[in-house]
Amino acid sequence: MSAKFNKKAFDEQSPRELTTGQQQSTSTVHTRSAHSHPQSTEPTCFFCNEPAGSADLHNSSTYNIDTNVRKCALELEDTALLAKLAAGDLIAIEAKYHHHCLRSLYNRARQAAPKGNEGDDSCLHGIAFAELVAYLEDMKSDEDSAPVFKLTDIAQLYTIRLEQLGLTVEKQIHTTRLKNGLLSALPHLRAHSQGRDTLLSFEKDIGPALMMACHHDSDAMHLMRAAQVVRKEIFESGFSFDGSFKANCQQEAVPPSLLALVNMILDGIKHQTQLVHTATTKPALTISQLMVFNSVKHARNVDSPSSARHIRSQETQLPHYLSLKIHAVTQSRRLVDTLFNLGLCVSYDRLLLLTSTALESH
Image (cartoon, rainbow, N blue to C red):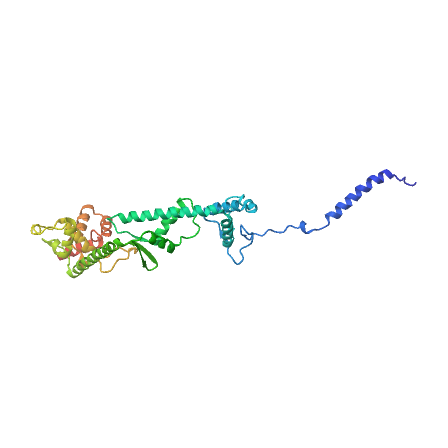
């Protein structure tokens, strides 16, 4: 029995099979877009979208860089750059850039800026310079001081004032040009080179400034010589404690020059009529003995963990007396050693040696 051909069923099936075949053939076609390529993680410049190359990429770290870049993009009407800036603050998005790309942006914005801005900047520079001149003139009028200015400090004041007036200072102030302007505006101002620094001072203040410097140097020399004289007598005295406290033993343990110096520091300089009736005070004797006890020929290493060492020939009566008295009252080794570390008395071990020596002698 022959099958009856159904033309209507054939017409409905043929488009369906044709579509299925096309889908199968399409699914087997491999195109370049079908394969996903890994995106490059190499950082690129925010402005030129190029990697570092021979020029290093720099991080956006200064707080005003985002403000300056946005200002330049608005002035240049750079829509591509404005679209990038819409992603957020340059520091927040960790944008990196080439120095020459940022410099090129600033230069293009400066060239595109209207001429009126240059006049405004010049006006602000004039205001800051006039205020700087007024400040120097005020310092000149002060008769109680002889001011000397460093040119770098003056340039810093000038920069700070420009920023306070609303001007963005992108480059360092030309100090030589600033110095020449100040010398022209202030005829009595003089510039002196001192190594890499330039010092500015008024002509009338040069003499007093030199006198003040000499005066300070003279005071330092006097202090140094006084210390040398006193230290020489301290180390030449050769005092030794024999375990007894005799009359006037404290005065004998202290060099006269040191005792006189401490007396003058504590009581002031006496008039000639008062010198005859002046007696050495107990505080002066106490301080003098502690100074002798703690004096060393060579400076101690303050970072050394070991305790301080004292020369036995400089152990005056007071440190021994304090150690004996405190131990007799408190029986505390820790307290004795604490006061020893403060330079007030001998150590606990030294105290035991003294007591044992005294017992053996008796």
